[in-house]
Amino acid sequence: PAPADEDEDADAGPKRRGAAAAPERYLVSVGDNGPGIVREQVGKIFGKLLYGSKFHRLRQSRGQQGIGISAAGMYGQLTTGKPVRIWSRTSRKKPAHFIEMHMDLRKNTPEITKDEEIPWDREHDTGTRVEIELEAKYQKGARSVDDYLRQTALANPHVTIRYRDPEGTETLIERAVKDLPEAPREIQPHPYGVELGMLIQMMKGTTHRKLKAFLQHEFSRVSGPTAVEICRRAGLAPEAWVARIAREEADNLHRSLSEVRIMNPPTDCVSPIGEGAVEKALLRERPGAFVHAVTRPPSVYRGNPFVVEAGIAWGGEGAPADELASVFRFANRVPLLYQQSACAVSKAVLSCPWRNYGVDQSRGALPTGPLLVFVHLASVWVPFTSESKEAIAHYPEILKEIRLAVMECGRNLGQHLSRQRRLADAQKKKDYIAAYLPHIVIALKEILTLDEKAEKAATRNLTEVLEKSRAL
Image 1: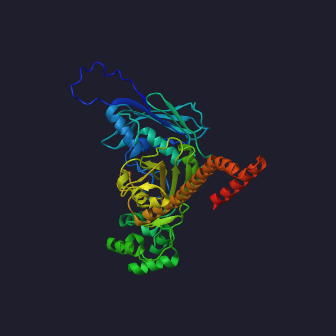
Image 2: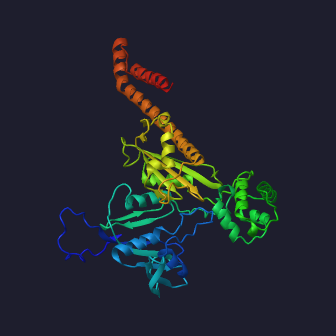
Image 3: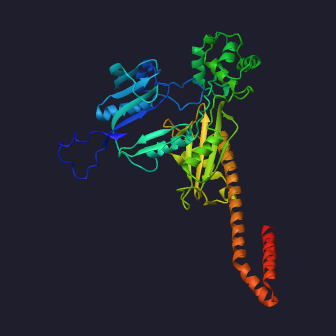
């Protein structure tokens, strides 16, 4: 982001004493080297609220419910009146598209004022860039843009981030790993995770006429015998026509979905970061630190697969020794900066027995020391506490997996700290031996009237005896 012109309101008259300082105007520009966006979708994505692409799909993604970028463009339009500007290219064989648009807030539709093909002069063959001019307040520190990008780089170690702040300072965060994560596969909804309203919508939109075929082909892990059992419990015939099922019958069908024993859904729809990648990212954040990461086996809550990953960094450059531990929370590789106390991650971290691992912890508080705790939840459907997506809900299955992952990291930290203490004690004893042994030998020489050869032998023998006793 860069400050826009600030001289436009210079002659607007004197400011009222005591009035709050007016926000500054910034030009926010974000670009990537991804696959680009096809021309037909640009207007809907950037100029239409609640244009979602994740509903009725079960695959891990950052979540596109149609609020983020379109809401940012709307805010820019309301505060500055300037349009959103988009550049995008989907193939090196095609020209780039440049689009300027406003939002019709009454109709919730994009108003494209400029649409033209332009040459592509960027470093990469494909990608998207968007510019929004808006009024805002820029600040540094916790929960700032700088902090968000730093944490984004932690959860996406395969990404290189280049950032220039409003003061002109450029920051480059090089990627920690070169391999891209595996693309998650899309799966059908699992019966345990389907709400009644969603079931009714699926029944209206299905192409399968008979109920048994609908259950087999529209849901994950539902075989023929399982579909028949679901129908039996719901009091419906397997050959019943889906379009003729009444609301009360749909309610019985929904209830029977949770009563039948069904296999857990497949987990290849989730793509974790990986233990090695997390450790490399933590080392990039805290050079010289002790790091350890854990990826838990896939688990399921309400029919939704999820994977918990945790990592810790102890010590390293710039680590505060006498402050509370830093807890970085992520959901599908996106940092969660707000509502830390309301999040399942914080509750799980607080409940861990940190004193057992040699780390100080006051009752009801985070551990104290040069500790960074990293927790990532990857799921096809992250259960947030609210629409703002700032905290993860307290499902028992999720709390258990987070706690187990963090405790495993804690045990490795405890072993590391215990080993460090033993090494420190051994070095201390060794220093004592080196400091006092010459004086002991001199005293023995005077008492026993040893010659030089005997003195050296006594020094050697005493050193061996003391070293052996130190090792016991």
